[in-house]
Length: 67
Image (cartoon, rainbow, N blue to C red):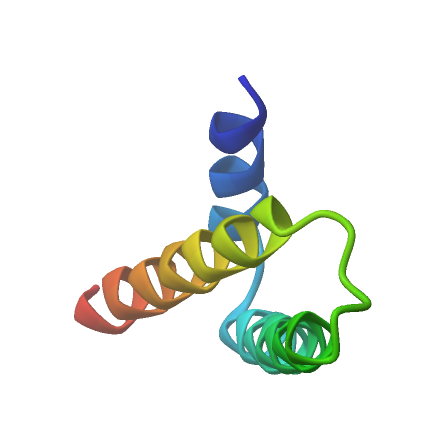
């Protein structure tokens, strides 16, 4: 499964790498929303995927902070 591999990849990263990945994902989400608003976005399912990835990254950051 793709998501399990992605979460394992996130767990192996450091806190700074996770924060960098979170910033990149939020920028991508902003760009996707902008494209959607201007009717330039072909794959609208990508918005949902990026939102879930942001939640996954934030979850891993919270788990690492609790350790």
